[in-house]
Length: 142
Image (cartoon, rainbow, N blue to C red; front, side, top):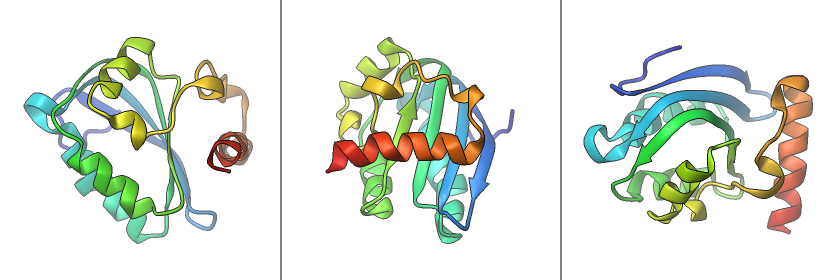
């Protein structure tokens, strides 16, 4: 697991496809914006670099995020605006974590729920996984 500036949250970049503009990130630990501003470090130190290289669709795998402590939605809103017509998908986040995120209005910026929960993502090759998520979100956005 790699550090990106957070004291409690770690990640792996499982796959980045710069030609097709998507990345798959797996997260583990405690997402704590209240004390450590984890979203700021994630956005500034990783996401912005990837976006500079053309990534505009992000798949966040959150089954190993144990809890979430929110603060405000400024960095999430900024990230959402930066991806423009594309998306940020939250896959397999625990229900209590999604509920905590929703309490801060983050469900407006992160697509989650429905078919994105309980997805057996390990059985897909990266491009197949992306196509599956993109298809789900394409139906939602239309």
